[in-house]
Amino acid sequence: MKKSLIFIAALAAFSGSAYAAVNINTATQEELQTLKGITAAKAKAIIDYRSKAGSFKSPDDLEKVEGVNARFVDMQQLRKDITLTGPTIVRKENQPAGK
Image 1 (tube, rainbow, N blue to C red):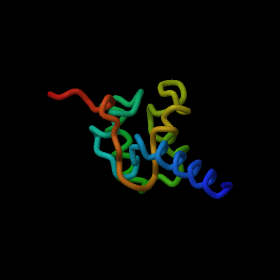
Image 2 (image 1 turned 90 degrees about the vertical axis):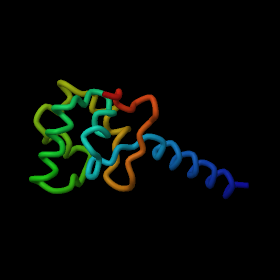
Image 3 (image 1 turned 45 degrees about the vertical axis):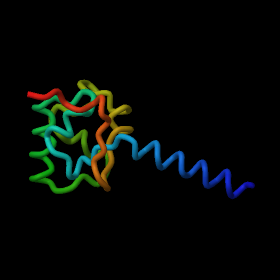
Image 4 (image 1 turned 135 degrees about the horizontal axis):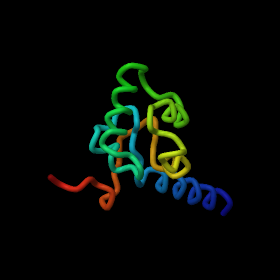
């Protein structure tokens, strides 16, 4: 019984974190813009920073990008919605509007 509960808890934890996670190391500008508080300019700045400095090693490294800090972005929420590995999974309601 205890093993079953641990398995269910682990499954729930992984499925919740994978539901909507934007991989900041591989995401396109459009994918980055699905994150709350990330505008087109900030998404481009993230990609430019990533191109120059290499992959982000920690979610906190995102604050090294100009304009991406607690003054302009809810960093606590942003950390919940990003990942450093795996595929980018965008919530349908967060997809950028079409042209």
